[in-house]
Structures are given as structure tokens and as C-alpha cells.
Length: 271
Picture 1 (cartoon, rainbow, N blue to C red):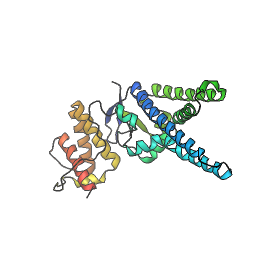
Picture 2 (picture 1 turned 120 degrees about the vertical axis):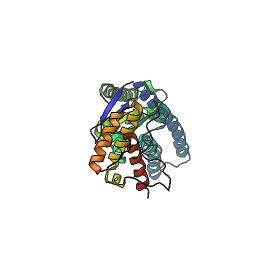
Picture 3 (picture 1 turned 90 degrees about the vertical axis):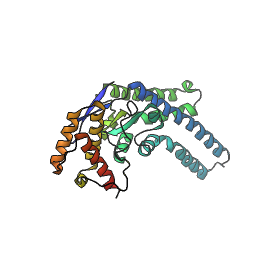
Picture 4 (picture 1 turned 45 degrees about the vertical axis):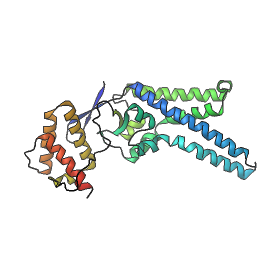
């Protein structure tokens, strides 16, 4: 299983498992199938509305607006799902992969949007699906055939980028500073940094609130990786650097110390 090492703010590399190419491809195919069937339904709705409309200038503009509204969910399919489903679409969720930022945390909305705006192949996939729905005799139409072949060229270029990139990133991922990781391989990558803490919990280190959300994500990633690998030195190094930075004295073991920090953060950030 290929892994990538991601540096954190504490100068400690955290490892994430890179999804195999076939997983990414299957996830994309699942999403394409969903979009295809949606387009079939949307096309029938459009035809039904068109048949019951009178044909004049106003109705023509109205039908164009209806067509755009029906096509909008296809264009926004990936960003809306990734923002609302914590970095996953339906296909990604089924195949156990997720979009995260470069330290393993949840990307910001701006990162999801940058990633989406530069996913040129997704737009071409949507165009292919639209042509397939609206043109049953696809290869009898030279113009449609050319568009499909051009779209396939863009998609192949995207695939080459993923295969050749060290982190399996497309152009959008590189500029948005996001990566795709496996989530289901060992079940240790949680959806967020938040965990349940009892109302009666008493925080031990309120200094934790001096750290940024990015730092908290890094602590969580380091703790998860150190536990998974049984790497005491990684946890000890992170604990030492945090104690030095926040001027904390504690006799807790490195694993317990990092765990308490996350609990403290969860309690204090919600009170």
C-alpha cells in the first residue's frame, strides 16, 4: 500500500495511505452513473415542460432557464457533496476515500471550491453525459463525436497527472493543497477532530486554546499515526514540542498527554 508523508507544524511527518488508482476510478464511475441517471430524469422533465409550453420568445427564454436549473446539480455535484459530506461524494464514500488538506484535516470551503474550479475533466464528463442522454445515435453525429473525443483527451490528461504525481494529485488538488486518502483501510482516520466529552469534564491544559485549528488537526493526525504504528518516539517528540511551546509541565505519558489535549480542546471550544 502506497503512503505519503505529510509534514506538520511540529516538524513531524504523518503518514496517510494513498488510495489505489482503481478505487479512484471506481468512485468516479459510480458518481458518473448517478449523474447519468439524474440527467435522464431531468431530460424527461425538460421534455414534459417543453411539450406543455407555448413557443414564443418569452417561453424560449424560460425553457433555457429551466434547462440551466436542471443541469446545475450536475455542475455542482462534487463541490456540494464534498462540502456537506466531509470531503466525500457518494462514490468516494462507497470506495472509502476522502479529500483532506495536506495535514490530514478537513479542507476549508475555499479549498473545495478551488479544487472544483480546476477540475476540468469533471466539466467534460458532464458534457459527455449530456451528449449521451440527448444524442442516442452518438457516433453518427460528427460534431458530437469530436466533442466526446476531445473530452476523453482531457480526462486522460487528468489521469496521467494523478498517476505521475507523488501524492496522486490533480492540478486542482495541487493548487488547493488537498490530497485524497483512504479512510476505511484501518479505521483510524476520524471524520473530524471532535470527540464526545462529558459535561462534568475538567480540562487540564487550557493553554491548548492558544493553538490554531491547523495545529489541533496536526496533533490528532500525529496521535492517530503514532498509535497505528506503535511509534512511541513520534508521540514523545510531539508532546515535548507542545509542552515547550505552551510552557506546560506534565508527567503523563506522551499518548495520554496528547489525548488529554484533544479532550481539553473539545471541551473548551464548545463551552
